[in-house]
Image (tube, rainbow, N blue to C red):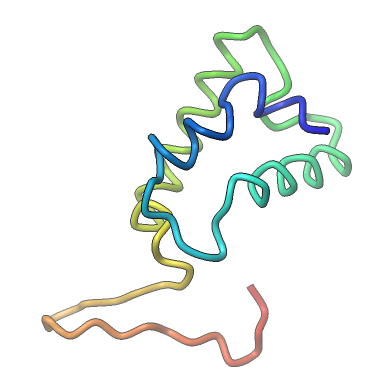
Length: 97
């Protein structure tokens, strides 16, 4: 049962409006699971403290930053296009993220 994010952002708005072209590993369920996991281990709850406006502002800031950093939830890994039109994906050989 999700209670933190689903009250502020229903499933349809996340996948259809915010990130319609999202790719693995990004998903609405994964985001909700990550928030619940984080909140289970921390006293300060992500998107769960303050009034409704403060929680919505925190979620908007988080989504804005992660959308920018992940190419709108399409890049699951770091991509670099420095000094070239050819992009290289840095593979994490140790499988540690």
